Image (cartoon, rainbow, N blue to C red; front, side, top):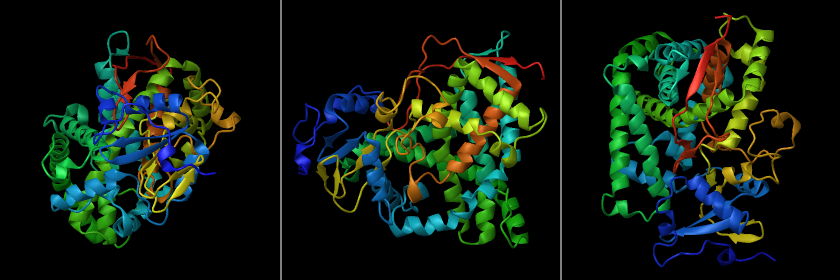
Amino acid sequence: MMKPFTALPSPAGSLPIIGHLRLLKDVTSFSKFVTKHIQNLGPIFKMNFIGQSMVYVADPSAVEKVFRNEGHYPTRSLIDKNVDWIMQRRNEPSLFIFQTGKEWLTNRSKATKQALPANVFSYCSGFNKVAKQFIRNVHEIQNKDGTVNDIRDLVRYWSLEAGAHFTFGVNLDSQCDEDGHAKELQNATGAVIDSLYELQTAFPLYKIVATSSYKQFNRGLDKVYEIGRKYADKYISDIKTRAALKKERVHGTSLIEQWLIEGNMSQDEAIGNAISMLAAGLDTTAATVSFILYELAKHPEVQEKVYQQMQSVMDDDEDIDGSSLHKLPYLGLIIKEAQRLYSVTNFPTRLLDHDIELLGYHIPAKVPILGVMEAMSQDPMLFKDPQKFNPDRWTTDDIHPFIVLPFGFGAKGCWGRRFAEVEIKILLCQLVRHFEMKSNFPSDRLPYDGIILSRPSVPIKVNFTPRKTF
């Protein structure tokens, strides 16, 4: 017999009006906080934040059931609707990544062609150039013994340069950031992401009075748009001139140029979408790559396997393209294993438009349901040696496909997934080709924290030893 929603397990300590909000005081990692409650309460529980119930699920079959019932217009979370309200208040179009309903479907259809593999692979030349700038930066800042004291800034710069390449067609060199725009954009993007936490968990007091998070979101977004428009203004004249001469979309030109050529977006729409897509990928991609490079530095045998696979399919001076990436499947396993071990975006979420039964409990419509990837990924019942970094498990073990969802799922999944995967793979190839990386960090697991995103919380010290072939 199905149990009522009120019977769902819930942490002790809920108070009238504020619910469980007081439990979040001093929490630095929301994913660790929720995972601890999963371990104590079981694979499904609920919390209440100022009148809003939220359900957390750490059972892959239940997570799959939620996504299979998402409907024609999926709603990811309360963030989508709350950000939409803020954008209306700002008298600006809603950001593509937060849109819902018919507006989302209409705008997504305008950008579908650009996310197809043929177009994404056409950016490989630029991604190789950006990866080589990363290598140059390593040589410039490493100590005499080959050590870089903290790779996180290098990775953030690389993420910005790769994103600017395919969104605006801009050849940035952030290490020569004389005007400080690269650093400002990174900080502003982080501020926007961090402010989203309150927009999901707290009573919408910002609709009455400007709260600190509301102000932080707007300040950060203002800065993102300010810098993004500087990039756009710098190149838009040339982009419009080229677009006017072409009747069809040309693979490899920037997203903004392709949209202007197709004519389905106004100039302001194209610029706004390019800015939001550039910003959306900065922090997530940088954090993911930081975790990957740490694990590679701790596992030279994994690096060697990639290196030998590369040696078997391409020459040392050959740039990596779509064809060669298809011949390097181990790279995908490395990325997926790092995403399992470190869930940067930990809570794939849906608000369903109908009631559903999950693990024997009745869940009402419109209640946010969050899959808890960290809890599932660290579950010894689901993974053998879950704390161990082992890319080969993805070829030998029977792993449920709804445990690790770093890019979400379905039509509402991450639009830029292919771009992120290709630029990451090319960077890994170039680094493994040029260096042997090592880390003497005393722990197997890299410490991390974060409320919306999980990020490395300590400097990542890596030794880069050039391979003899270079």
